[in-house]
Length: 430
Image 1 (cartoon, one colour):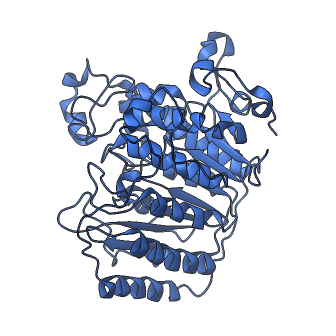
Image 2 (spheres, one colour):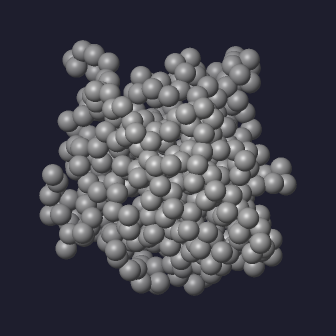
Image 3 (cartoon, one colour):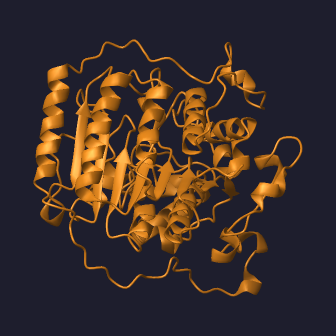
């Protein structure tokens, strides 16, 4: 049965096989676990599943500086000792290590978010999901916080070709600083980030006083929270602020970053959110019935990340999932109880009612400074892709990925299906 919303879902198994190194908290393997959990619940049968194209360097340079993109393209673990100055300049090192297939990893996750935005722009779907995306810390000329290329900025730039105003919402435990910084001076993107702030917590930005500048003044909203916030406090604040934001700003499309490090028990997080609480935010945003691009983000207790993004895929499909996890290749990770939901945590909630009320009033006061949605002089819409010309005969056929092939369904048995293929719905693509 086709769901009410047409959903495009992007996944390439190669993103899950990269390795940041021993003891590094970022484990892209969580994406394979998420995908196989999605498969085990048969959610793929209700969606159009695509492998994203690998973003070209010239696409990445729509936001990032060309020299930074070129450096990422060139650097390898074997040659990094030759580039100590550049490594420092571009902030590659302990947090953002150089590893095998680094650039291809960036191309895939960024390509997924760009493709998601293009399908939304062309009205080929209502919701587009790229759990591999959401790397919100990357800056124009440097890596930051495990993020190298800021796919979210690239996706938003794509959406701005068709929409006068785009709303960005971030529920990662860390401030969405890279996205905020990229759009700090414009009213065409409103950024709203709910995050832990204080105690030298990374990245150290995201005070409520950071509201944007020049044309962007009042179009950056920060909701700084303390340790231990729980479902009821978080979702109440989220719904109050987001409903007022949508009413005031009237966006044409929404980008929702669903970092799962805001869940209870995360290796790097400090909130008490259950998966139900986290997913309630996704459910609420979906109700606005606006074109919606959903990405992943942080999340460092990988079995909980997989649980969370699977539940949220179900929410986007209006599908309630049984709590008992079906058999799948990663089933052992979900023991001993093999259940989908995780309870909220038990960290002391340092967010008093008066503190949350103060934050809420501050945000609503800033929103009152925006009299109405800004009127935007829309320029001529540029083409979806600027792809460099090349000689097809010289191109490796496996690398020959363009607009046409991106819109075809590409299937690899080992990635998308377990057991029998059920192609009927998969091939039914607009």
